[in-house]
Image 1 (cartoon, rainbow, N blue to C red):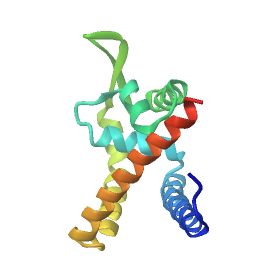
Image 2 (image 1 turned 135 degrees about the vertical axis):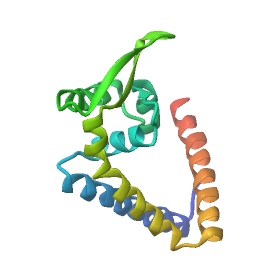
Image 3 (image 1 turned 135 degrees about the horizontal axis):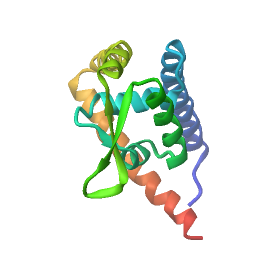
Length: 152
């Protein structure tokens, strides 16, 4: 199905906005001497008090295992995280913060999460609910359309 010019212009506008949003996270990460993926890993761990596996982080960020292993390796060397074998699956490691890691991430993640929450709250509950609903629908549509490319 061909798309018309108006749809194409809106897609480009949306992509520019998405890129600006990503740039906000990049700037926040850089402020703390982190890459964006490192910031996102800290965020995932912060909101997973029991820790999570490298596999879960890979799936959440759609990043390969080597990238997450390199990031967690750096945080491990700095003493910010510990990595423990998962009893049910010894190939997987559960990652969680050390006390030093909690203090480190505590200076980064809560202020960033608060800024994100405040930015979204400015939309109001109804508009924010609609944004989440539409973004979920767009994501599902993209997964479907892109999977058809993979099938060819």
